[in-house]
Length: 427
Image (cartoon, rainbow, N blue to C red; front, side, top):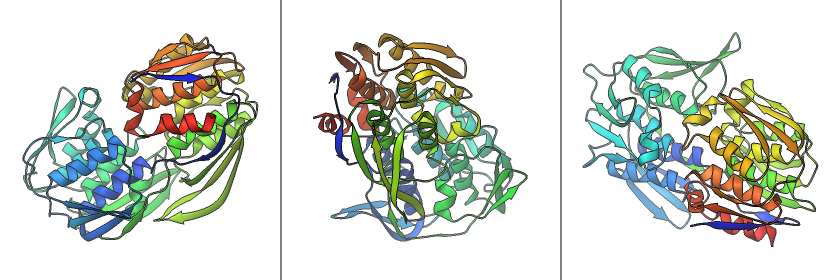
């Protein structure tokens, strides 16, 4: 499906955001290995979290749909059953990497696969620590399919220092640690998303500026009720859209505001954005609140270092903001974007140039020379990447004329009705 976006003169209204993908994945996986039934309210209908549910079902877990959410009938740490076929993770790297940590501790063999995009993404980063824990994990030239066989003497606890800031790698090791003999410690020098350790209630020590996260093997996971907040990564597109389009004011309610996810708020405010946070509260240990964003002129900024892991998914839309700001924005130390659903640094560069922006591409980042709202409508590809598609949709609201995003239906991976919501805000 191709999507055409017209230049907008104003945005207004309340935005209904999809549930947080990162948290939804984890609620399904933790509920599956919990002792007894867990309830999940506001579970995501997006393609990626549904892939996680499909895998959970294939592992023998009953998932019941009710009027107010899901009931996942957990069977404890060792209650999963061998799947009848390879587990299809679709396009979801989170599903594959987190589930690999759980499967490494099982007493049966399994295989994880996915679509062509997922099968091209690097998996050695999880195979290395799992193998160091005596897990029997093999890859196909560093990528999926991932074959997992029972560890001969069970998984062994270890101390693991993350070589790169990655919530998925961290979560994989922590979940495997629940099955290991002894206490596993994961050390991160640059904090990444902390949903897993929050949800498991893991002890954390601060040591010389590092976070030491501890998980003890064999400790059961209690069944509970989960409430999934609105996805901040989805909110990001509308925070930028309303900042860029004149005469705009948007209200976003129930947004997850985990501080390990919201670095974009700090960056946008540093650029001059007008964003107000109100009604702050907590649900299932996760902070959330309501956001109001109004149009404001933006200025270029420098972004790098410890900020990057906490806005890695928002860099495509940040690049659109930078292209419409005054002055130069430099994004550095973001080489991780080259191994996402597509090479996002290259995709952003090509598409923004097609719209008339001046962008220099570096190995680990971008330099974007903003010239205000001077983009020109064009036809740009989604690269079959949901975040590229949605970022170009926002760019189309600012560009003069009309913009067409090809293969735009990939937005459903994380935001099933994105195009309808975007269109309603511009009406």
